[in-house]
Image (cartoon, rainbow, N blue to C red):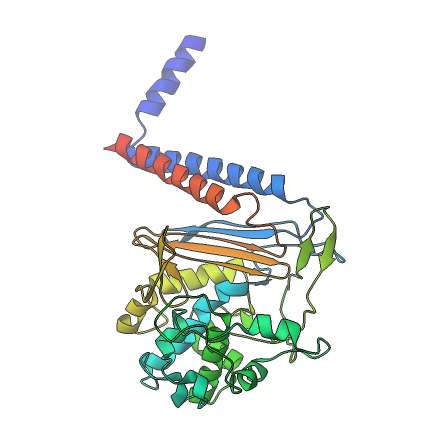
Length: 375
């Protein structure tokens, strides 16, 4: 009887159609991926610690959308796919989309001099594209206001503009070098306001977030706080493991270089909208991932587009702020995206990004191998 059952099982297996075998291979590979991702993040994040939200999207399907740890240590609320987390510099892609929306509307050009919209001498010779691709040469606002500001007052974009109006020295002539510039993205937010006549966060919500299906995504200004649904709070963890809540920092009133709150669910919708080219016209969409500037440090050459660092096959961006680490990578040569959003400062300590990318490569190889067997 035992041998008969084995024989029958072999017959059933052999009789499976190629389509059934393909589905089974894909399902097994996905379960292995989920298990490995779980193991990796559980090893990094305790259940009562601030944590992470993870997104893996493939072929317009959310393969993984999951939270680890807590969004609020006091109430013990967990991080879920709908938890809104602070994006830090991953926000820059949305500021760039606001500018490109105005380009789409014919209201500005990337070649426009910033001086047309912000009429102060420091902006002469600086184009909007210089601001977008980190070749403006504007000085760093953080360095200045970290030393010379009353921390009881929340800093906002217009106060950074007032400082620039005093003509502090530029780091280099516009377009001649590359240096990552948070200041430039604050100025882009002000240009959006000047040209559109709308408050920047409102413009982003109406013209970008809603268009992308991101119903619960917003820019946040501590000086004019709004309610963030299912908000995660930001926490710093020191070398001894002590945890400190850090949401009241006086620079949390600036927007454009950071300050977006979004969730895995909303970011998945946004990723699909990008792949469907649903936010901008097809012509303007082509600008998003087109290399616009080069950062050559003598060892590696990197390219920057519209709020994204780009290669031939990927578009990615990282973010870091007090109690926040974020990273997102979109593959341009295959329909794969992954993102890791943390409400803590430990994402880049243990190669979690590289390990996640390696697990995804392993998953895709397993699928490809299964497909070859079906041929």
